[in-house]
Image (cartoon, rainbow, N blue to C red; front, top):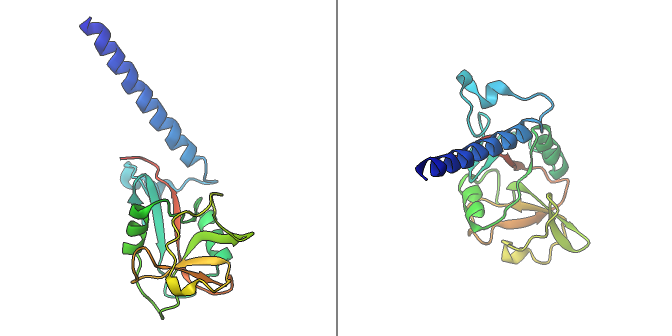
Length: 181
């Protein structure tokens, strides 16, 4: 009986390890050329590439270059070049994490591009799902600009603003973590 229980435990553990390895392989295959030195410095792999921040199984790049900043499309293309997308905010905890890693720059209208755009009068994230959080700044409701920014330093549940696609800003990329902790 004890031997059978041990075998069942070992089988479950091997299945978990197999699933983790398959998931890691899927992430590696999202790159045309996997950046081993960025993920595995000194031959020890980490959750995220150098310069990215880990949070709940995802990696985030906060593009904080002084200039030049990028339009929404340029930002999304930059993220895609890193096998990522502009950030998709799924809940209040992620909103808090992202907001706490941004800082005010230039003026009160500049922020960080989110992966959120208006399509046929609906706000859609780059992963295809509708926005249900609506963390919009209350005084922007009359604006008709089709892209979303997170404005640092504002109320956590009221810091998204609408912006025109030609406006240049910093941005946040998001991708799956290589290794889950």
